[in-house]
Length: 596
Image (cartoon, rainbow, N blue to C red; front, side, top):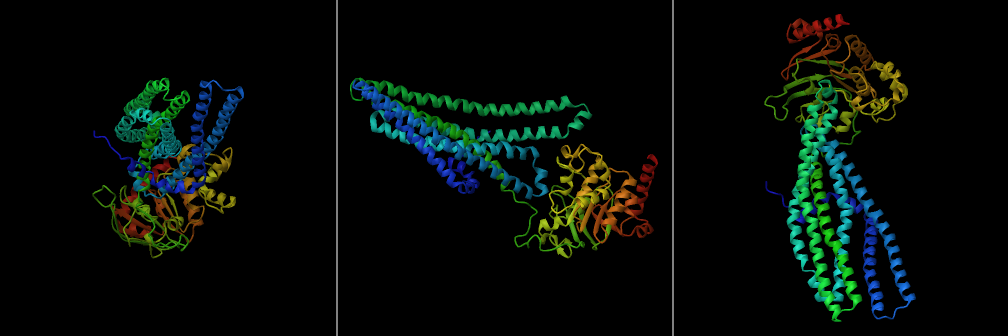
C-alpha cells in the first residue's frame, strides 16, 4: 500500500477552520506566548551567570559574597521562570481547551443540520470517535504542540546565536548532525501522516462495534451469544492494536535516532572544545556555557520530533473533522427563505404529482402521488407493508428531500418554508419510538417553553400514561434509562404521543404509533386525541380496523400509488383493495380481542 505523503504546508492547511478561535482568544494567547518567550530568555541567562562564576573560580579570585550573589541571581531567575511558566501554561493550554470546546460545539451543531441520508451512510461509532478522540488530538496540537513549536524554534535559534558568539567554528562543527536530523524527520513524517489516519479510522470502527454491542445487549443475552460478540470485539481490538503497533514502530525509531544525533554533537564539543580550553583558546567558563547552550539546543531538537508527532496526529484528526464540517445538508432552507416566524401553518396539505426514489433503489417508493387534505380533517393512510405510507408521512415535514412543487402546506411549497417553522407546526410520532435518558418531564416538554404542569397533566391523560407516571417513585421527575428501556413498549409509545401533542400543533402525524398497545387502549387514546384536536389536521397510519374507520377520509396506497380514496362506507361499497385489507384486519382484531 502506498503511503500518504503530506507536505508540511498542506498539513497546517487542515487547521484553517480553527483560525477564528485563535482570533477570538488572541489577547490571552498573545500574553501566554509572551510569557513563554520570557521563560526562554531567562533560561538563556543562566549559562551566562554560570560562565561568569566559573571564570571567577578559574581566576582564583572569587569571594563568598560574589558566589552567593551568583547563586541568588540563578535562584531569582528560577522564580521568574516558574511565574511566567505558570502564566503561559494557564493561558496557552487554556486556549487549547477553548478550541476543543468551540470545535466540539461547532461539530455537534453542524451534524444536527445534516440530512437523514448522512446518518444512513455514517456509523454512529465513527461520529463518536471524531467527537472525542480526534478533537482531543486537535487540542493537543493547538496547546502543547503550539508551545513546543514556539519554544523549540525560539530557544533553538537563540541558543545557536549564543553559541556563535562564543566560538563560531565549534558551533558549526557541533551542528553537523542537524541536516541529518532534518532529512530523517522528513522521511519519518511521511510515514506518520498515513499512520495516524489509519489509527483514527480503526478507532472509529472499534468504537462503533462496541457501541453496537452495548445497544444490542438485550438481544445478545436473549440468544446467549455473549461469547460470539466477545470474539468480534476481540478481533476488532487486535486489529486496532496491530495498526497502532505499526505506527509505534515509526515513533520508536524516531526518538532514539534524535537522541543519537543530538548527543553526537555533544560528544564533538567535548572533544574539540576540551582541546581548545586546554590550549587556552577558550576559557573554562566559555566551555561550560557552550555545553549548557548545547544542552538547551537538545530540547528544540527533541521538540522537533514531538511537534511533528502532535501536528501530524492533529492534522489527520482535523482532516477527519473537516470531512464532516464540509458535508452539505441535502435538506436545508433556501437562501432567500423568510424568517422562521413568518407564517403559522393552518393544516392544509396537498401532494401534487409526487414521485420519490430512495438512493440505491431501482423503483420509486412513491409514483405520481396526488392527494389533498383540508385543514381540520382527520385522514387515515392504508396499505400493505411497503406501499409508501411512511415515505409519504416523512415527506410532509421534509425529512426526505422531495422534488420542488410536489408537497404543499397551505398552498406554499414546503421547500420555501423554513424547516424550523415547518417542523415546529407538526407533531410526528414515528414507528420507532425514541426516548432520551432524561426525566419524563423533559422527554415530553422536549425543551419547549411555556408549558404548565396542568397542560402536561392533560396531554399525559390524553395519551393514557398519566396514571402509570404517578405510580413511579419520582413521578414526572423519574429519570428513564437509555432509550427509555425502563418502560414497556406501550408506555414508550404513549409518552411519545404526549410529546407530539403537548404544544397542540396544527398537524399531527401518527405513523402506526399505537401498535404496542391493545385495541381497546388504542380506541380510548384515539378518542381523546380526536376530541382534543378538533379542527386540527391529523394523519393516522394504523393496521387496526377500529382506528381506520374513525377517519373522515381514507387514502389507500399500493406500491407507491394512490389506488382508492373515500370514507369507510364508500370504500367498502367499491369492494376493492380497501375492502380486502379491512376484512383481514377485522379478523386479526377479533382474534386479539378474543385473546384478552
